[in-house]
Length: 76
Image (cartoon, rainbow, N blue to C red):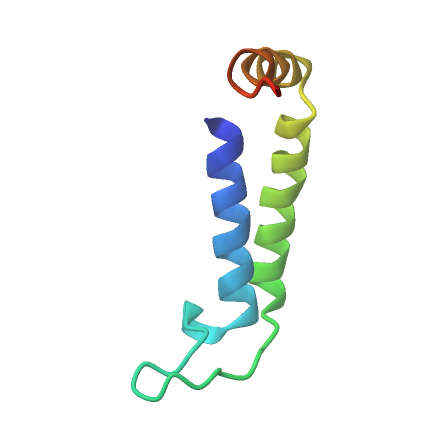
């Protein structure tokens, strides 16, 4: 579950780093807003991403993921 929240934090931080106010489209017209790069928010996104990758590679997470895949995602 922690991996999921770290991933969500990373994607949300990237949204705010790329688009001022976090909006990707104009509310009334639906046109895409220009991208801007906010260095401080991009740095926050990098921290989330670093922790997300570490959680994804944690031995206990890998073990539990493998067990889940064997139990619920069996092919055949």
